Each structure stands twice: as C-alpha cells, then as structure tokens.
Image 1 (cartoon, rainbow, N blue to C red):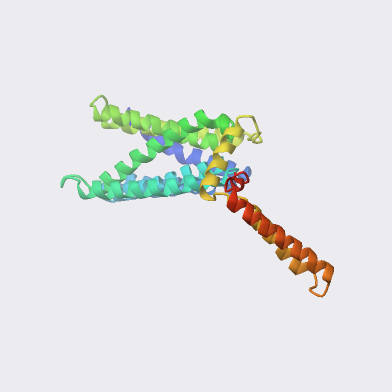
Image 2: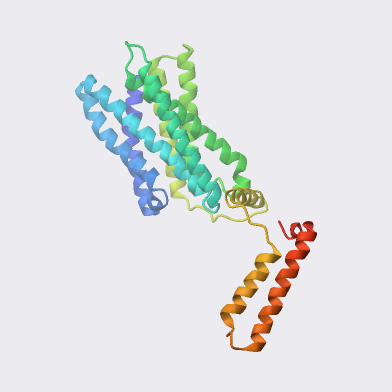
Length: 302
C-alpha cells in the first residue's frame, strides 16, 4: 500500500511542478525568483531521468542518478534560501551584504562537514550517501530556521505572509519539518523505510501545493510601518560599523574656505588678497584656541 501511494505521489509531482512553472512564467515570477524557477525546472528534468531508470529496474544506475540529483537539488535549495533572504532584505543593503557573507561561510562549513563525513564513513556505507544526507539535514534545519525567522521578524521587515517570498520558504519549511521529524522517528526505530519515503513524498507534495497557491495570488505591496524603524536602525548601525563617520573639525572647514578663496579669486586684486589674509588669520587663531582648549574640538564630533 505504501509503495503504490508513494508511486502515485511521485508521478503527481511533475504535473504539479509543470503547473507551477507555467504559473510563474504567466505571473513573471521567474524574473523575481530565477533560482527557485531553476529549482522547479531541475525537478522536472530529474524526474524525466529517474523515473524511466526506476521502471526499467536498473537499480545500480538509479542509485547513482538519484544521489547525484539529490546533491544538485540540495545545492539549488540552499541557493533558494539565499535568494529569499536577499529578497526580504532588499531595502537594507548592509544587512543584505552581511547575510551574503554568512551564507558563503555556511556553505563552506557544510561542504567541509560533508567531506569529513564522507571520508570517515564505514566501509559498508557509500560516502556519497553519507555526504549528501549530512548536507541535506543541514539545509533542512536552515530552511526551518528561516521560516521561524520570518515569522518572528516579519513585522520589523515589512514582510506579509501573503508575499511570494514568504510562500516559497513556507513550502520548504513544511517539507523540511516533516522530513526531519520522519527521519528522527526512523532513527529511533518508530517507523520503517517505506513509511519514511512516503512521508517525504507527502511533505514535498504539500510544499508544491503551497507554492502553486502562493503563485496564483497577487502579492501585496510592501508597506512601511513603525516596526520598520527597528530594522532601519540595524541597517544604520551596521553601516556605521563598516564606514565610521569622520569627526568634524573647524580646521578642515577653514582650510577649505581658504582653498576656495584661492581658486575663485585673482591674486592681482588687493581686496581679494586681504580677504584671503583675514581667513588665514582666522585659521591661525582657531588652531591656537584649539591647542589651548582641546575639548572645543570634541564638541563638533558625533
């Protein structure tokens, strides 16, 4: 019974994905979310390769094709998380740059962990399976974490639950939470392997249905609110850390006035030369005053 239902869900996936791709093209969402669109197209391509091999009964070829496709799918899925993050933080360039750096380091750490796990895998287990499974767990945890992040900070970021970015990550989050729960039950001996595969197929079906539903509706315009002041303060604080503002001072101001006076006035004019001399005297007096009272300059710093 589990095998027939899983096969039925597996066949339904490309039909739903094709519908989703067509809706994205119709709504022009493939321009806003090109990585997610590539992820959907790859799932169609992957099914077109795996299904005939599975039906032909060539399990050795199916094994390598399945895990290779799973690795590529995970890489695209991780990139989709980054794309959603950039979409959410689009108005905040500094926060977006910080997130990009964090995602690069996260990808490097996951790749390093996968290599170590593959190298240390037992002789009776495939290194490819161990590496892909390890990265898969990491990506699923990040997807669940991003859903919780959006639920917690949507008010501060001006993100509505009806927006497409929220719908995409919500689908991934539902799929990831079901898969992690099923894997925990499987590791504890509560369910068997066919049940685990069925739960994963059902979870991915729920994710596609969520994506189709969100793609069909028109996303609301991102509105400003009082909660955005907090995120704007985060943006400004990070910008100040990256580019600390230099202190203002009277000396550069007067020197700039002198430079402008020299550049704009002719040296043959006595009246203009006297004006320049007066400015030079003011600069000299200001320097002496600041030498005698250092705290004066501090009042102009921010």
